Image (cartoon, rainbow, N blue to C red):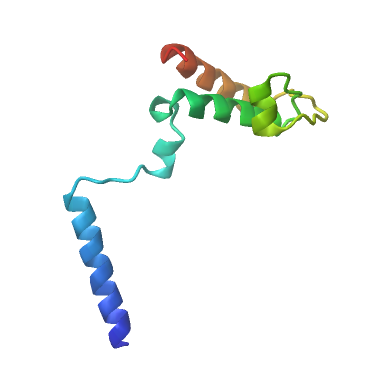
Length: 97
């Protein structure tokens, strides 16, 4: 019980110390917000959607990241996936990727 109290106190001190230094970790929602993603992150997020839908990658970069295998539906996307890809592409254009 005493060790639990010490651990809790040290955790609290660490949390206060980290906050006072201005180090704030991004929330999971912000990590997936295209406005905060790098060009590489945008590319990967967009192509990950295609990869899980069986897209056949022809570029060295695409094959290195997702493999050469492809399968049905061969990159055909559902409604929400199309919307997400369009959003990611818009941010790629906006950021000059």
